[in-house]
Length: 322
Image 1 (cartoon, rainbow, N blue to C red):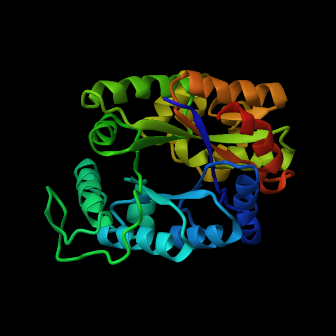
Image 2 (cartoon, rainbow, N blue to C red; image 1 turned 30 degrees about the vertical axis):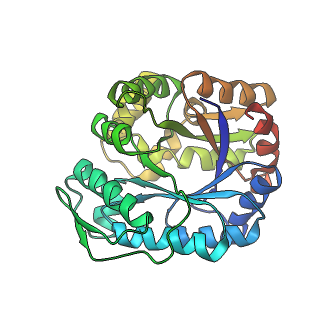
């Protein structure tokens, strides 16, 4: 498969909301083909996608990953169709199961039957995005009678996966699977899992979100470390960081100390283990390492402290894929 690059807008805590779209403009002007708009605690993803389209000239948009325990297939389809119709852009969507903190504590929803809900959501969403009047009963989800009046043109559907069951769902139902904050070794392992689970002749593309920073400032390194605090004790991630040599830190985070205490112990080497961070040669080599490990697409999440919009980092990496 052909390698490609993308950009995800940074919405890290502490960012000036007025500066978030700087990354969209930089990605568009540097001819990146795709811009991802995740949903954090700052902006509604569909609202941000609409704003990004108006701030740029041509870049395609992917909204998400969106949590299937929070958003319904009808709501997601309406969002995708609305952005596409109102902006004229090609718009895709990514789905995932998110975390207990987001689903249960923020939204007060029950996080259960995650894999089944993910599979049902994709199946229903494909019918909705095709403009069909849907009559769908899945294992845990149903929708009847709705027809999207503004179906988008050929939208891609991506699944965010990490565990084995979610990878199997992605292999069978998605156009693409996406990983976030992973080592190249983990990319290689999950690539193999994806290929083993995919039906003959149909392996989804594999995209990997990669934190990136060219010659990061101390402030940028602090933000990069802060973004990893919540992952150290998460299932799967703890094991990955242990394999990468941070077992003592994982064990400490597993005791549920205050986030500030975890942050104080995170070394700069940890973000570098799951990112492309450093000087010119280091960043270039690291992005190439992700491609070599099996990523079809590397999606850069550039640090912006000291590099407005991540433009310097994005300009450096842009020629590493067609």
